[in-house]
Amino acid sequence: MNDQVLDTFDTAQLIPDFNAPQLPSERPDHATLDAAEHNTRHWVSRESGPLTPGSDAHRSETCRMFRETFNPYRPSVLEWPRLAPEALKRIVELPIWDIAVQTEGKARLRMAAYAATVDDPDMRAALALNAWEENRHKEVLSRMVEAYGIALASEPPYVYPKDAEWAYLVTGYSECVDSFFAFGLFEVAKRSGLFPPELIDTFEPVMQEECRHILLFANWVAWHRARLSWWQRMLFELKVVRVWMFLGWERMGLARSMDADGNAQQQDNNFTVNGAQSVSDVDISVPELMRLCLSENDRRFAGYDTRLLRPETMPKLVRFALRFMRKKPSTQSS
Ligand SMILES: [Fe+2]
Ligand SMILES: [Fe+2]
Image 1 (cartoon, rainbow, N blue to C red):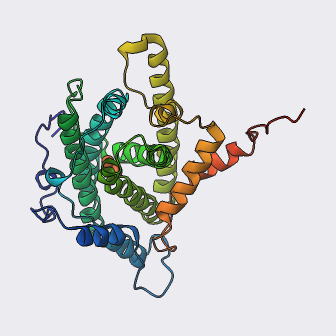
Image 2 (spheres, helix red, strand yellow; image 1 turned 120 degrees about the horizontal axis):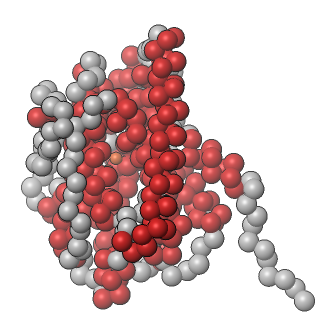
Image 3 (cartoon, rainbow, N blue to C red; image 1 turned 135 degrees about the vertical axis):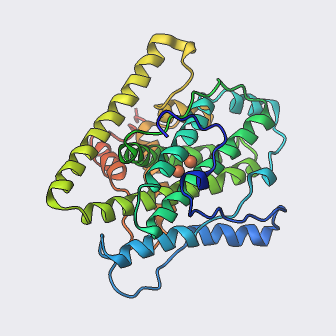
């Protein structure tokens, strides 16, 4: 399967025992949408004991959480509201669409490739569903791009990873970083009032889905880690360190190519701070934005069983950084 290019993606082609979820063909009514929204945000295990990382109970409840919080929306029935010219221009010009589409394209393949290597059927099914949901995100984006006439660069071929575990770790930790900032930016966009609420509503399930994805990832990492022998564990931890170094390098590399190429390089992984200006017309300082990212992160995770682990690196790093950032100086009195 090396170097295979997958144009039409099918999770079941990579994971033969995967059953794709059945989706309603009609657009659901408001009550159904509200129920799905509530269901996807709240989940508590029926197990009464602790969910010790690495235990069977931890694995089965993590997978159950992922299954039971599934949101059955169908991309083809999503609403793309007509936009006022300024809002349309603002959306079309966001420098994120190419990287967003390609990130989903890579994520679905990498997750499916790793899922195919997992022996445990429960965990395999959860990771396969995650891959399927990334494919659905890609479809949502394609439909939006079509609805608003956003021009995309042609997509590079998606290459089947040689080291599926490495590729999954890169994707998982990237999602932890990107979702953390995306939660804050999405809230900035929502509060700005520059976009119609229907458009915000259309993207809301995608945002919450990323929260479920990184919740699954954090628990998969802990489960996987706990089941390794001491030497496997050492190799794994080394790999995790290399993944973080790679992510840092990748982001700095992208930032540099932005500087060097100016307009030629439209893709921007370091979109967060510039992005706040693109989705809002109020000036938001970096510490304010970081605090918003933290509170949105907490809000999105609040409804899930507290015995499941949360991704911790980004919230910890940002809380630490905030200790060194001064509050906006108050207006000086004369
Ligand atoms: Fe996604
Ligand atoms: Fe995701």
